[in-house]
View 1 (cartoon, rainbow, N blue to C red):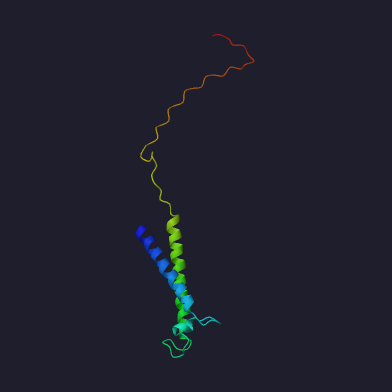
View 2: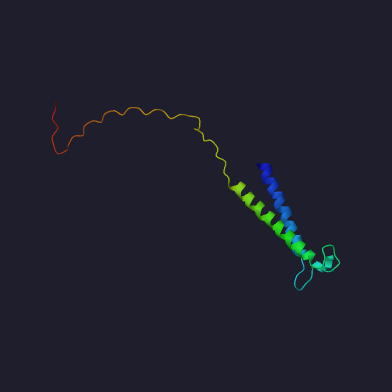
Length: 114
């Protein structure tokens, strides 16, 4: 189970870095940061509006991978392994028969010898 937790942590880090990179590459309404890397031209690989769609879809996919890996890490982290206790292999002794109780004398009556 430890290898699965390591795999989820690696997936989470990679998807977090990818989301950060893809958000920074997307074209904003004012700054046009994406145009600095060539996504502003209409003759690009994805067409005039294709890069915006590709970047937004890729961001959504990596965000989903990030959230799923986070939930998986949380689920694995909350599973508590039940370790056997010190007395796990012992058997409880059988109950001894109870001795009959001595009669209780009423304090208002005097004791009569037999």
